[in-house]
Image (cartoon, rainbow, N blue to C red; front, top):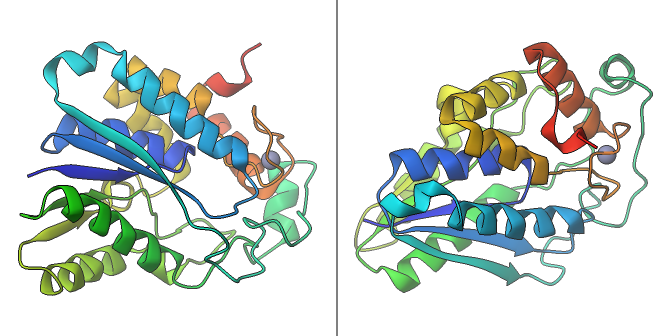
Length: 241
Ligand SMILES: [Zn+2]
């Protein structure tokens, strides 16, 4: 039963890729989408994360699959800050970000319904007998954002059910962060638990709304990332000189 991991090139999906390598059946595929998101560097990070994984010692014990970057030209019509059509709010500190907004500019209605369906399609096109889709969604429990409904464990389970009903064989949707790492700090701790290969791969990741790598430290995802590393008490490997 094969596995496909949605790999954006951000920290969350990178941890999920390494989690899948440890916990899911092989072959392990990865899928990234180019849908006009502002963070083109994120996609470059996804390529680097995959290449790094292929050359890691973990490869010896696994039958790795393929990494695909699928182009979805302007498939989303939202004005989300993830896309290139709106201004990015910046903050001087994580505290200012927490005080400055109660809404996340990145919301795209039902984005994960679309991306999970496409991931299942890519998996089943190669392996019609079914398999597992791993996604790094997290039903936000932090005070900044009360939650995107299509990031919850309930939604992931419902998508697994719908995809299985829509196909002849089972499609499991697993959301490890909702289960094992429901905050960014816990995601960093999970990366450390998965080992140095995983933690060091975080140096290649970014989710910066301004498209910077290393992280700019000023936009919402970068301030959240900085706060999470500070909470854990470790340095962000992406910020090493
Ligand atoms: Zn940024």
